Length: 298
Length: 298
Image (cartoon, rainbow over all chains, first blue to last red; front, top):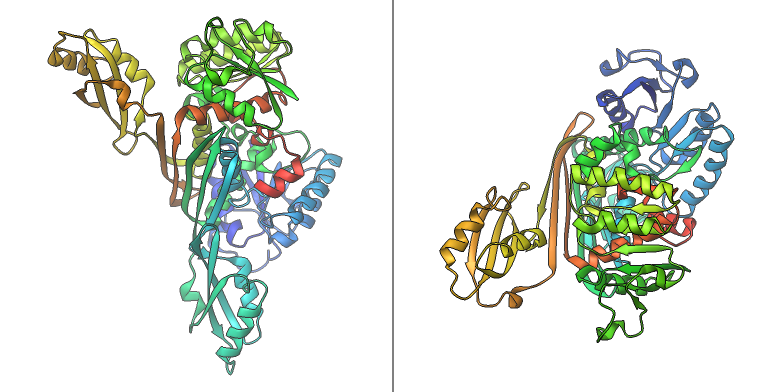
């Protein structure tokens, strides 16, 4: 049985523990987090919790459930031990490309596999975008996120002076455009209109229609539900008006953790190097026998 | 430039010619069909049309646009020439499994690649089924087809005595169940009620709710529009109520032909053997540079 460690115990880490425990073919090697002393959350009582992955004995793959910005360093550190990594690095574009190149070299040097950007977007949505484009090469794919909380935008709003806590909702406005609804809990004495003006001027918000609301308690608004609607109308060969839709409404960290867990399986079947989900045959994310999978899925 | 031949010139073959011609990185080697003498359809005037693929010079891959039942023999014949094949073999289950095994051996013997069952179902829908299951391993996926014409059911209705021509529509009835609406044009003197009773008793129809209608001209009813709605509500880890939907409304042969064309590209990047789309990294269906694809799709 392959042994999988969960590195980081925030939102995604919690669900990653559940996903690994629910997988009949994987064994939870343990959880790596900074805080190991003191009272552990009750669900970790039967789990080995350490501050260094090397204390977990044999580990075949590590799910890196840490903030995207710290993923590259963490991945390097784990790969250097010859342990496969899976992450849900969620910064698209140049940053991802650079990370992919660098970590590919590290992984190859240490005979390990890194599956990167293996959440839902980037991740499974990327697979859907590829499907849409290969089915109808000409056309536009619109990815509409939400309604759901945006971590990045919430953090940006929280950084504005006078804001004690903040939550930014991404509201789909159609055709790939989004509206931001930012809920703020203010520090005593802070002026709402000043806070609002600062948020509206922030580069995270100044390109989208944005509304700011003052509330008394952010915690009461928190929900990890999220969703996406991807749409494409395109041309196959010379035939126009081919219409496609992909939609989901999901618990965000639970889905991310589940996809990462499936990607860990694929890591055991690849040659050393770094891979996005697009570069992996999906069948490698399953533990069943090939014939069984062909019968069930094809 | 890779040279691709289209084998068979029925519904899918016609659209396959268009899809290959529309692909900037592929060259149409020609069309293989039985009928080469006499008047060619106008769109084939500039195309090399032969009755034997060996008359086309170098061919790197052949799109087998022939009925599913004749696909295995045709694939073997082409693979034995060392030419890659792509088909949209659409019989699920044991037949597909047997075909995959046999053709895998032939392909390996001749150093060629066969991409099989590469239409939309099986094919891209199979990829979606895999995505759904890896995202929420527990749950039921419902595949609802239509409204659209079913070739298999139309042929079965046409075989009933007294039927001159027939068309069977697949109507989605929800949760993966389907209603059949069969339109028949009768031979002179045939009795509608006898025909109706025979159709209702046919194994193709006796498990589904089926309605038979008499019409004067089947040709006036024909349209190649089709669709699918796949739905899954499932559990990721221990989190229930994860909701997913995949929907499309498409020109059926145009989509099939486009997917086969994309699969031909993947055939050039695989080791000899047989592969379903699930066993191929989707990125191999594109001709663009990896960095460009990561930027655009991931």
